[in-house]
Length: 316
Image 1 (cartoon, one colour):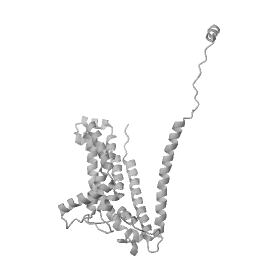
Image 2 (cartoon, rainbow, N blue to C red; image 1 turned 90 degrees about the vertical axis):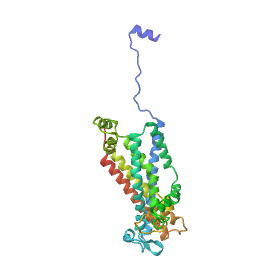
Image 3 (tube, rainbow, N blue to C red; image 1 turned 135 degrees about the horizontal axis):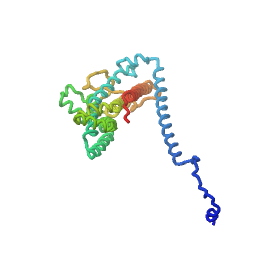
Image 4 (tube, one colour; image 1 turned 90 degrees about the horizontal axis):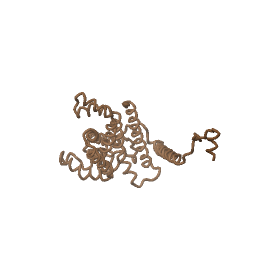
C-alpha cells in the first residue's frame, strides 16, 4: 500500500545511508592491549635486570679493596685474596668467541647462500627445519660433545702434550657449531629478501649463478648479513654450558687456545653453584662480571642496529 501511494504521489523512496560513526571493536582492542602489555613486560623485565645488576655491582665496587683501574686492567682474578683483575675472564671469553666466529660465519653464510640461491624449494623446505632442530639441542649436550669428541680429536691431531683436556679451542669450535643455525637462518632471510629482479638483471648481462650470488645478492643483503653476524657474536659471548664443561675452571690469562681458561659465564656458573654467603665480596663480584657481560652484549646489539641503518638498501 505504501509503495502504491509513493507511485501515485511521485514520492522518492528513502534510502538509509550507512553510518560513518566509529564502532568499537572489542576483539581488536583486546588483542592490542595484550600486545602492549607484552611490550611493557619486556621493557620492565630488562630494566629490572639492569637495576639488580647495577645495585649488586655497586656494592662490589664500594669495597675498599676494589678499584675500577684494577678491575679492568688487572691480570689476576681471585676475590678471596683481594685480586680483582677481570682481564683473564674477558680474554678467555673473547678467545672462545673469536674461534666460534671463525667456525660459524663461513659455514653459516655458505649454508645461507646455498639455501637461498641453489637449493630447490623442496630441498630448502627440508634443510631449514633440520637446522632449526640443530639449534634446539640443549647446550649441555654440546658441552659434553666438546669434551668427549672434539677434545680427543684435537689431541689426536696436535698431540696430547699440546692440547689439554680442558681447553678453549674445543669449546670455541663447538660454540661455533651451535650458532651456525642462527647465522644461516638470519643470513638466509636477508638473502631471500633481495628482489628477484636483481638476479634476473645479472643473468641478463651474462653473470653466472655464483657471480650473481657473491657480487649481486650478498652485497644487496649486506645489512642483514652484518646484523646476523653481530647477533651471533653476542650469542657466542653469552654461551654458558659449553664453556663451563669444556673450557676449564680457574681464571688464567693465556692466549693459547689449547690451554684451559675460564670465561665470564663459566666463572659465574662455577661460583654461583657454591655456598656463597649473601653480600660477600665473592657474591657481589658475580654481579660485577654479569654487568660487564651485559654491557658487552648491549654494545654489540647497538652496533648491529647501526650497521643495519648504515647499509640498508630499500627497493621498490
